[in-house]
Image (cartoon, rainbow, N blue to C red):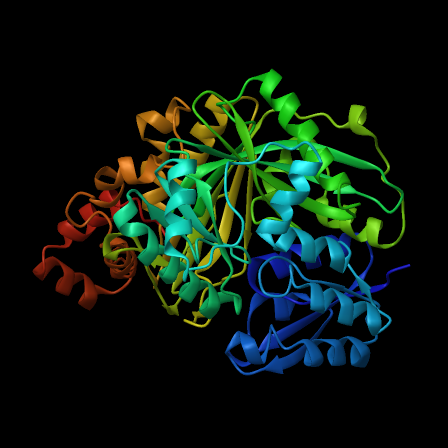
Length: 503
């Protein structure tokens, strides 16, 4: 039985995993890079060990050091979280070779599903529909590339076989662009993944991105936990997710979840995974990829099904059978997740760094925050700018949207720029309110979402300071005189207008 888990990750997902370990009476071990020495996951875990300098290649991706820490700490299992080494087949193998339990699928399942071309071939054999596409592209055979594109039909998408996160992808609209796009995609794929293999797929022009959560045990039992709508994206990165999808019908949902289970069964999948689909305007769905790990957006599935996915992963890794069958899994209500990033929406979403001066997290019925920052925490440039996930639940979609609006209104972070007001605007966009959106939602509404009223997205730090100064003035005559001299009433107006109350 697993008694101590090393979490090979950082940030909010490390904190989230440690929470489930604590509830399950399992000891936790954190690893940290030098910049993360005072990070929340380090403070919250039962033990913490230095993994290396700031660059992830020397710390969170340092396989020998992570396994060394596991042995030194007496951990009997490693949970990879998401990102970093979570879909690294070599890591899964090294962990098991070291006599440790890898909380995730077999290395072979990771390897097969991590190769998008092999995964496509496997899905075709398993009867899962795939987007029309090609095999490996050879950029020295220009005539062949052009012929394949013509047969598929423009527009086409060039994609890295080992890719993810939008890297190694190029959208091509005409024959004049195709060869250059292939070469650029190959170069980017090589730099990002160490593998320049690319292939071609038909580009669906107004798709929905919908994924299905699955769980499989060691005894051939595989179930789904319904779908998540992930179509609110920026540069192929998800920003808002919800479940159930407001787009698909029950009939399509049943067909899609059945195919997701078949996809997982084709690789004898064990653990938590996600099968992703693209769905066109006519509700035809096509396999996109399978993520062989926990997803960032897993909390909305947890909230609507009542199943703790991290605990489920640990039990499966322990060799326990699934404690439920498909008929036992029920979904209740509607849940939405917003990803909170330290970035500037008015400056091309430039990631930010700096010290968090103040944070007020939303509370109340149906609200959950998975974060890792605190007042005084220094956000660095070394890692992904995701700093928190805000999850809400409602009895129906209308209530969930209203609750998310309220929660975002209450969420205050000063000292660094965030996308909170950008997310508020998404919630107030008619297309989102009506559930009528696809993966082009942000680009279609970009001007409205990023161009705020003068000072609206800039003055919250100033408003916080002025509200505090106003408070102090009540007990300091000299300061009160100074404020009167500088039109104190203006500072009151700042506090009222920007809803700042730090007390």
